[in-house]
Image (tube, rainbow, N blue to C red; front, side):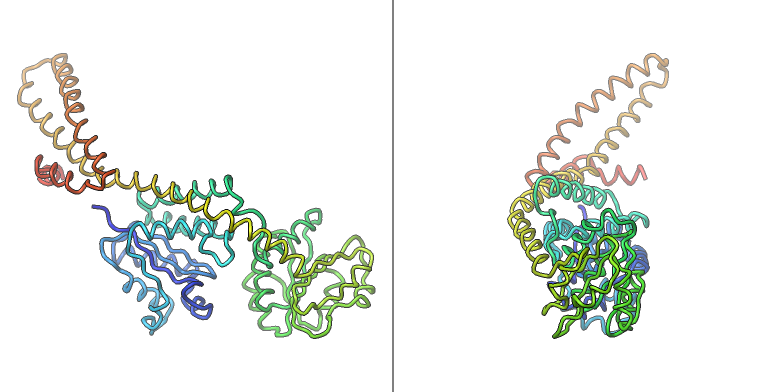
Amino acid sequence: MQNNFRAISLSHKSAPVQIREIIALDEASIHSLLVKLKDFFSITDTLILSTCNRTEIYYSHDLDLSTEIIKLIGVEKGITGIVDYIEYFKIINNDRLAIDHLFKVSMGLEAQVIGDMQIANQVKRAYQASADLDMAGPFLHRLMHTIFFTNKRVVQETAFRDGAASVSYAAVELIEELTSNTYQPRILLIGVGEIGEDVAKNMVHLPEAKVTITNRTFDKAKVLADEMGFDVIPFENAVSAMKYADVIVSSIMKSEPFITKELVSQFDIASYKLFVDLSVPRSIETSIEEVPGVLLYNVDNIRSKASETLEKRLDSIPKVESIISESIEEFYNWKKEMMVSPTINKLKNALEQIRLEEMERFLKNADEKEKAIVERVTKSMMQKILKVPVVQLKAACQRDQADQMIELLSDLFDLEKVSEKKS
């Protein structure tokens, strides 16, 4: 029997950000935890996925190890009272439900922004980390490649991944589009509240951009800048920095506009200057568009674009779920056959052992030509004898009755004894 595939999930659906950031695992912690799981529990098929929205551990084992694994996370993170957080974890011990959950997470159905494009790469990196430590066996390899193929189908056959479905990502997509002909565009992000921080994190999709951030609270801006590899300046230098920036993204709370037409009129704009106002109430005067070379987009323009995309994605969900169901069914057919593979191999070995023993008994005085003929005939006979039980085993898999057939063949041919002899 194969082990059950299981999942432990802490996500934005079960835990607030204050809890998620405590439990979150970086690359080093993931590596260390994988090694511990391998050493302590001899787990081979394991996947650890940790993003800003979720920390999840998938594993194959005959026992429910969820409590032990959560305690190991506590050890790894230095959390003495990790048991206090157990209520935030969702435990999935049903094999099919765990597989279904991983598919939905990987496709972006479980993301905060439905259809999030980043999750596919995050899952690939998690799989690579397991493979590097030999913690992905045939089961996980097949499962992950089925997921990657399913992801391609979703992209090719549906509108689920089209466009940007969050304001922050839509803003970054807009910037990318409008600066496509600018070499290393200089971007100034003013304000790193919730939406500003999200914009900053989405800037990873603009690898050529030179990003500078500023905030009234300098320390908050510096922590984010250090994390993302951006430059940071004091808030009082923001106006000066605007003069040199190609793109200014404003996400600050202010009762009066922070960026005015009078201010922008003083800038020497050689070709263009893009302003993106993500503040509510607005922090940029709409009249700045009257200044030559200025482009202005506000949160309503961008939200409209994101809302249209989100609507298309939501309409695509039934098709995505149908594709996932097809893939899981295909995977389960393979999984069922994998369950009987050891028995088929044992049966082949048992018959081969009998064949070799009888060959040795009766061909002691035979010449090479005679041996070759008997070898060919006996191998052909063995293949024909094997054909019926192998076909019956695979058919029993499809009926979910493989256990009985395995037990019957094991008793009939004493396969465990034959296996012990061979080892």
